Length: 392
Length: 157
Ligand SMILES: [Zn+2]
Image (cartoon, rainbow over all chains, first blue to last red):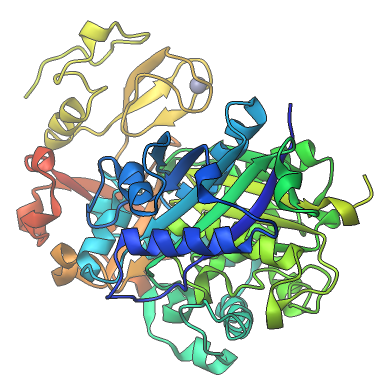
C-alpha cells in the first residue's frame, strides 16, 4: 500500500462571517491550501475531492461537493459530500488517504465547510439535535450541551472532579487561541471568568461550551509517487483510525469515556507503530470542556480519572510535555461543524512545518488529530509526522 | 390498541417488520401509548435495545425478542438544560436523565423534578403522556412523530 502525505493545508478564519457563503469560504480555504504547498502546485492537479459538511440549515444538501468545487475552479472532478456530523471532515481526510493509498488517485482534496452564524439558535439546536438519537434525545428537550452535560455529571460523580477542572480547559484553550489569528474567540479568560459564566446545562456553563462558527478548511493529500514533486519534506500520514458507536449516549457502554475515540486511537497508533508517549502535540475534539478531559483518557495520554490532574499540572500547556489544542481547540478557535476535522489537520500541518507562528511548539515532529461526531457516534484519529525528523 | 404478537423473536423476515411491529417506531409508540414500554432483548448476549431493533447493536445477533419493561429504575446521569430548544422553553430548565430500569435496560427522558432534587441513584418511575398536556410545543415534532406519546420520569422518593 502506498504512503499518503499532506503536501498543503489551509483554512479561513473561523467565526461569524455574514458576508461569506459556503462557496466563498470553501474557495478561500482551498486557495490557502494551494498557497501552502512549498513547490509549484496547480489546482488542476487535484484528481478528486471529498467535502465534509453537515449542512446546518439545509442549504446545498444535495450535490454539495460539486457545488463547492465548481465554484473553486475544480469543476468536473469526481467529488462527494461526506457527513458524520462534527466529524465530517476528519472522515473526509481519511477518505482522501484511502483514495491515495488504494492507487485510485494521486492528489485528493479533503475539505470541510459549515455556515452556522446566520441561523437562529433554534435552527442550530435542531440540526445538532438530529445528529443525536432523534426520537429520544431530541424529544427529551435536551440539546447537544445537555448530552455532554450528562457525561460531565457522570464523570464528576465517578472521579470527584469539579467545575474548576472543567474551567481549566477553557482557560488553557483561550490562552492558546489568543495566539491564533484564525480563532473565533481569540480572547483570554481567567478561572474566575470561566467559573462565573451562566449555566447552559448543569454542570456545563457558557465557558465550557464551544461557539457555533462559520468557516472552511482544506487539506491536500498526495501519494508517495508524486509528493516529492511538491515538497521536499512533506508530512506523512503515519496512521489513521476510525470507529463508530451507538448514536444515543444512553445506549452506550460508558458515559465517562467515548468508546469510539478509544477504538479509533488504538487503530491509529497500531497503524503508525507508535504510542501516546510518542506524540509531540494533539488537536482534540473539545466541543465541551468535558470532551477534552475524556479525550486525554480515550487517547491514552493518562489513566482513567487522571485527566484533571494532567491538565492542572500543565502537562497539556504549550510548554508542557504534551501540548493539547495549541490552536485554541473548538473552544476558542471555533467549531464550524463540517470544517473542524480538516481544520485540526491544518493546525497539525502548520505545527509540523514550523509555520504556526506564536503557537509554534518547538521541535514538533509528530502530532495527533482527534475528531468526534455527535456525542461519540463516530470518531476518527490521524497521526501525522515529519518523516525527515522521525527515526523510523 | 394493536394486538400484534409481542412474543415474536428474530431473525425477522422483512415482511414481519410492519408498522404494527414493536420492532418499528410506530409499533413501539403505539404500545407506549397503551402504557407498555417495550425493549428488544438480545437472546444471545442479553443486551437491551430501547427502542427495539431487529439486530443487536452489541453483538450483531438478530435473535432479538421483545420484553416488556418495568416502570421503576434509578438515575445513572442527569442534567438541567437551561437553554432548551424553544418548543421546550415553558419547561426550562428541563431536567433530563439517563435511567437504568430495574430490568437493566437504559433510556433517557425528561424528569419532572427540579435538578436540585435529582442525584445519581435517585429512584424514578416513568409514565407516558400526551405531549400537549406536558407543555411541549407541537412544533418540536417532525411530521411522522405527531401522534407519538412522550414518556417522563417522576421521582418516587
Ligand atoms: Zn447481542
